[in-house]
Amino acid sequence: MAAPQLSLKARALRFLSLREHSRQELGRKLSKYAEEGDDIDALLDLLEKNNWLSQERFSESLIHRRAGRYGNSRIVAELQSHGVQGEALQELKSTLADTEIARACDVWQRKFGTVAADPQERNKQMRFLLQRGFSQRAVMKAVKGADFDD
Image (cartoon, rainbow, N blue to C red):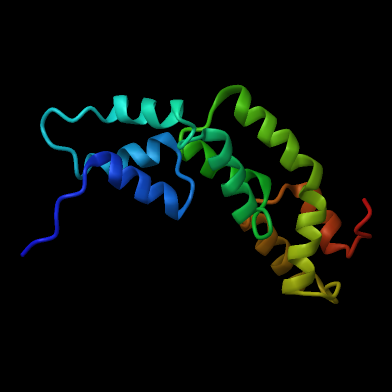
């Protein structure tokens, strides 16, 4: 006997119970299960109206998961890929900018812990942090072993 088919709303709530999703991401996941006559946009509107789906919560959740390992440009790019735009994105950028140097220093400390002895090692450390999406300014401070109060 086959398991009963879940409704789109039940699937949406199951996805949201696991973690926060952006509207765009949830819509893409639900479209795989949509049948003729299903209105995914109407369902997403209902979920937002009942505060089960929230772009703000999704953004905060993503930032919380990524901020300890990645720089601003990488996090902002991921937010944009999930459909976060406009004023909300600008606010998130400014919030991230306040902590970027400290986060870069923390990542550098966990990965390397000591100031580079030669230019090759210094370049390696800088490349690592730049690939993680940290700004040039944050990378320079971190690689110099800057005080964490800056």
